[in-house]
Length: 145
Image (cartoon, rainbow, N blue to C red; front, side, top):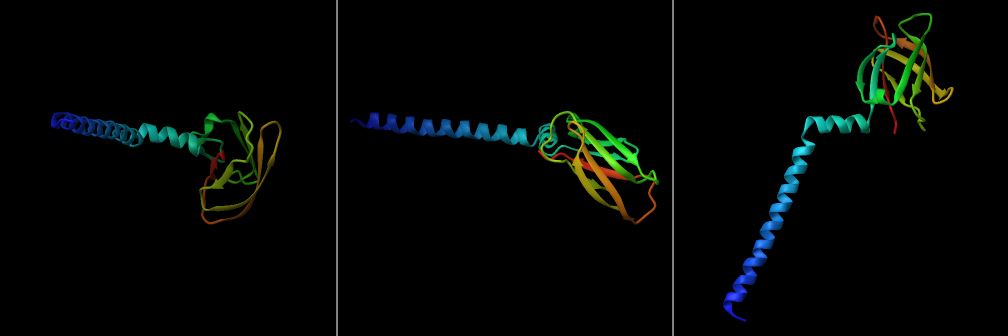
């Protein structure tokens, strides 16, 4: 085997390694570019942990993807309209697990959840205590998928 053939084989192998390195570098750059794109991160967040923040007046304050799965949120007030006694969540489709409901204000509720009609989830709230004067209660509902 001549020196020229050995040199040709060596250059070919080095060329293949450089080409593979270039391809992998390009793929890494594309992935890095995609996962650092705020719009891409937003899409993932909306599908991974969809949530909604609403108040005791049934107003949606922030939709973080959950309203695409929820038909309606009904708040049934207690004697004090700031604090509901029941919340009815009507999903658009069957949810195997009850969405997680938590309060965002300085209010403590004990919450009991049960299935309702069709796909509905019923949350029975019992006011334990509140720590400041508030005009309404705010809640975060997170879908468990």
